[in-house]
Image 1 (tube, helix red, strand yellow):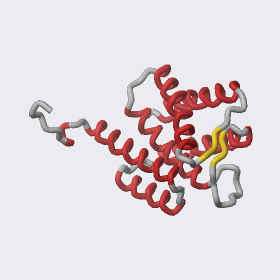
Image 2 (image 1 turned 135 degrees about the vertical axis):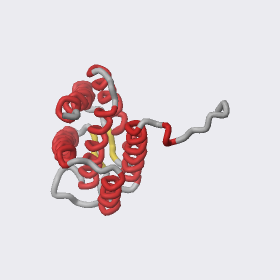
Image 3 (image 1 turned 90 degrees about the vertical axis):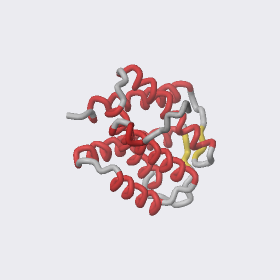
Length: 175
């Protein structure tokens, strides 16, 4: 470490916020995948909101992004691309725990895109890679079953995640 101690206060405020939100989201994701309890998810979202407050406009964008994500996930579920393991019967195709995970994901992605200064193609590649990998990781941890019904469906899946990052960039950037 060359005798240079790491100090949190030396980091730029935006970097500290990015590290805090990244850590919280990753913990939220793992908790939701390993043991999806809606009450714990709601508590975690409330605590995250207190630790990292947001204006109403960004919460509205996060909610709209989450609703879009849930609608698209319903299509992926219906097409057989992935089947979430949910022990509770639901009124919707997408289980409630996955809907709350989408809200946390939308909140994180809005923050991430605002913090990163990546060009559009890099954001597209980030989404097209990280989004599908998160579903594969969830399946590997036992939260869902992934199938490969067709290459076209997988291409659509990666395109969706890449395009989602671009939509977030153009809709959710700071005014």
